[in-house]
Each structure stands twice: as C-alpha cells, then as structure tokens.
Amino acid sequence: MSGGGSGPHGALADNGFAAAAEALWREISPAWPDFQVEVLREIDSTNTELMRRARDGVAARTLLVALQQTAGRGRLGRSWRSAPGDSLTFSLAWPMSPHDWSGLSLAVGLSVAQSLHERIQLKWPNDLWVDDRKLGGILIETAAVPAALAVPGSRERVAVIGIGLNIGLPDGPDLSQPPACLRELMPQVLPLDAAWVLQRVVPALVQALERFPTQGFAPLADAFAARDALRGRSVRLSDGRSGTAVGVAGDGALCVKTDAGVQRISSAEVSVRPDAGA
Image 1 (cartoon, one colour):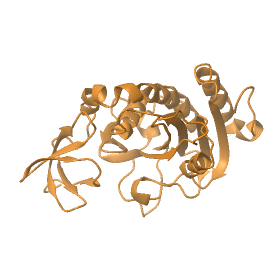
Image 2: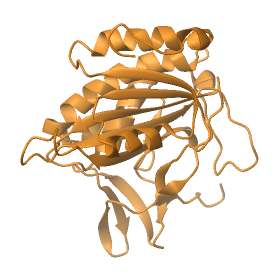
Image 3: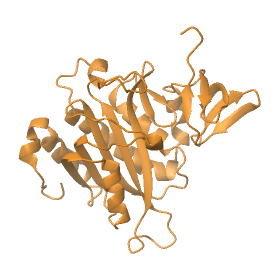
C-alpha cells in the first residue's frame, strides 16, 4: 500500500488486514513518505522476499505481511511454521546506518514485548518467551543500499527485520520447545487476531528503529534486564561451554560466568540447560 493504497483489499478484509494496513500507512507515512505496506495471502518467506528486493536495488521502507509462509526462516536456518489465523508473520525493510549494529535484535525484541504484555520475556538474542515457552522469534538480515542511492561514505544498509508471533497455539509433534500464544496470554482482548497485533507492534517498532542508529542498545539495557529470561540461569553454549548467564552488556553481548571467568558472547547459539530435577 502506498499513496491512496492498492492491493487485494477485498480478499484480505475478512482477516482485518486491509484496515490495519491502511491505518499503519496513514500513521507512519507522514514521517517516512517512502513507507509502503503490502499484505500477501501466501509467500515463501517475507524476509527472503525483502532481501531479494534489496539486492535488486529496492531500498524503500516496506512492511510486508503474509497470511501464510511456506518457507519461513528463523535464526541459523531453522524453519518457522505459520498458519493463517494462528500466527503473525511480517518483515520490515528499513534503511539504517547505526554507529554500531550490535544489540539491534535485542532492541527489536524489547519493542515487541513492551508493545504487547508485561509478562513477555526476552531470551537472548532473538526469542520472545512466556513462562519458558516460545511466543515468537526475530530474524534480522542486512543488504547493501544500492550505490546509486547511497550517500558517499555512508555505512547505510537495508535492515530486514522479520518477526513471527504465535497468535494461537501451533500444533505438530516436531516443535523444538513448548509454544506459547497471545490468545492464552491476553484472553481479555477480543477479538485478538493477527491484524490487531500488527497494529499494536509496528508503530513502536518503527520508533525503535528511528532511535537505534544514534542511541544504540545501551539506553535499553536496564529495560531489557527486567525481561531477561536467561539472567541467573544455567546455560549451555553451542561450542560446549556452560555457565550462568549474568546479564547483557551495553553493546548487547550476553555475559556468562564460567569456570574461566565472565565470558562475553556475541554470536554463539545459547540454550537453557534444564535445572536439575526439573
């Protein structure tokens, strides 16, 4: 949707996305005239599509929403299941030139959690949890801004921020961990559907992306700490190290106390080790 709007609104009206897309465009486009919203019935992956566009020279700020993804992706190439009505999957392409990219996924996760519910916790580096169950995930990728559009000497890139949230409980025996969902967390909200969540989350996410290039993650560290799902817990890293998570540094690195001292983790996969006897 751009300008007066376009797209298959009739087909999407039953899902509430036509009105949500129009409202978001009207709210965000005055500050960012290139902002556009697209809602698709089905796509392989919203992140994949926006990365394709970025590599083809498209650098517009774009919110791409899919009712269903057939090849949704999470961190480290994991798949992300989405089902119409029971999940919200979207990606936001946003040109940025932050002083430091570190901690962007944490800033994004914090924005989403704060927009939705006080009980949502954040599992470093990119998951949203409720009571040790996964509510959603974040995948951030970047592509170079086309040379013809880039400011000489600029470090600007197109960040593609992909977010998947469980509206209802997904089913399937192959889930890697027990899921959580927003309908369970917020039963008082009726109707709680993907379009409602989209309108709730996106404006705050845009504000977070506006602030991040100049402020980075450091000003958010205390707010993140209040929702840190790993702090004080035994964790095991994918490289075999283990220890106790003791918080997140101002640059977004996870701090883990091991036998060798406090280690700063910036990219390793982290999983929570079950408590003895749990």
